Image 1: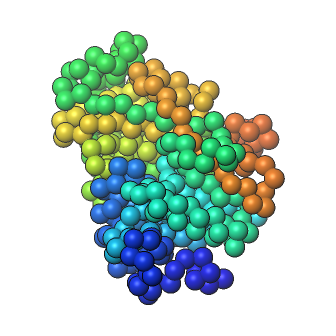
Image 2: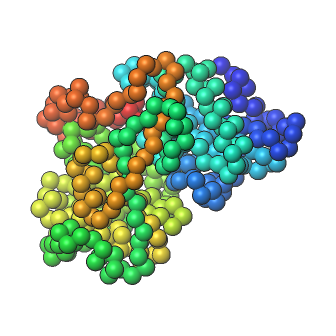
Length: 360
């Protein structure tokens, strides 16, 4: 299929009417303009950044369709899309797999409309099972949607001590317990130590792990906007978190702890240290990220005093007859999770990336 069937060819830069948006595919020479738009567009998130195209193509080998709408020679809207075609989990076009937020970010309704229409035509051409938008706000209220996910976002007070006092008493006691246990925090780019803490935690939950290469790519491509924090006890890493920085926000995104982390209150201490450092550096929003309703992570974030905010995952069904349900809460995965937890960690880490790359 030619991209010209769906989007305007990249070399065409002469629309018939200057104020009518034209849609193009992201190319290397437009990356800077794309990211400049993302930084300045209030609807855009860290997950709209152009770097995700490289990450997803290099880490997972999926086809990307990063679309942008241009008016009068300026980008006026973006829509990063990824096509996943999996024998086990189906054929999808999504904005954006492996990310909690996505969908269209636009300054004008004209740009939003043309990007939406282009995505729908592309989904039809590709004969995908469904087109998915992962929105912070509802967009296509006429499409089937999931009410499974929420996000947790909260303002960071400029005063460090006020942030500590804003944590509910029981959870605040856990942070102080971690400090009394002699835990220390440090910023460290060591992917190996981060991956060990993360993979132990994920294996404990019975879910497949991402590859080390994926995390190396995130660190390399997003550079200073991707940070690794380690929590150590007696000079050994017990917890670690990979966080993203975007505008005035910090987003702890991947994290975990070793088997001894819970007794040491290492995870509570870790998130407090991240919040404290962010406060001291002038960041204003702590984005605790996505959780499924009724899960342990949902309760953990609630216990920190964060209130859940609904996420709007909307689907336009094409070849599929029903919404996808590829998540650990689906009863059909119960036996798989139990079996996965019994695998040796080294074997789970070897097999996991081949599975998770198709889940999105």
